[in-house]
Picture 1: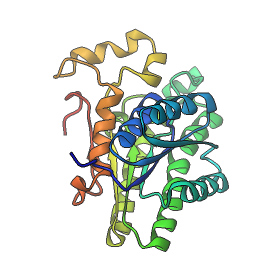
Picture 2: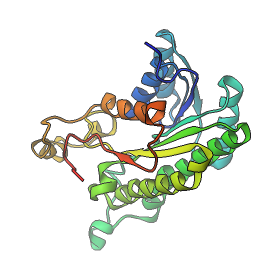
Picture 3: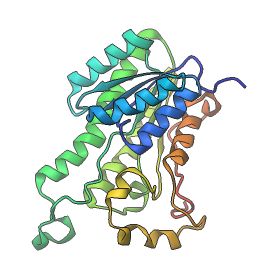
Length: 256
């Protein structure tokens, strides 16, 4: 069977996490050369070691994606190592579930730092990374695929107001990029996971997560592999006529 991503170069931000790591591993297994980014060196290098031990091609890169110069340097290094990145997964993010709330302002009692940090990582980081890829694709006259990891919080408003806002912002971002870059052969889509029982979700109290199980028609929480499979479809040529869309592996928890 032909590898679904043979010949492609992928960069996955936040690849030290469960979803980013699973996505990078699946991409490598399907033939892509993969650059795994994270701000935590040990986490991302562990994923790289596993991929390489399985015969895949992968390298790590550690930087802060809220700094545009650092993002440009990452893409330059990726180009030098594997060639022009033509698949980007913007997976870097934080939950903000334990950010302090000033009760006097009710549920909107976030401080400025918590609000700005959430938007910086999700929105600025995705913009800087996408811009860096598009610049290089245009110079090389190549097509490409951008995938942003949003959330059902971005479609249904669950979670903290800053988290929902950031994830909702990513949906607007991919729609705009899809319209602006479609004529250049560059597609942009979002994946909006439901409750994924791995990674950041494991940091939350069970009492916050378990009620969603009874509300989910498929009767289970999702896995990082469920999200990675959705990303694989959007990264591959099988989705060559799909852009500006949001694919939501959520077990039916949110139906639209």
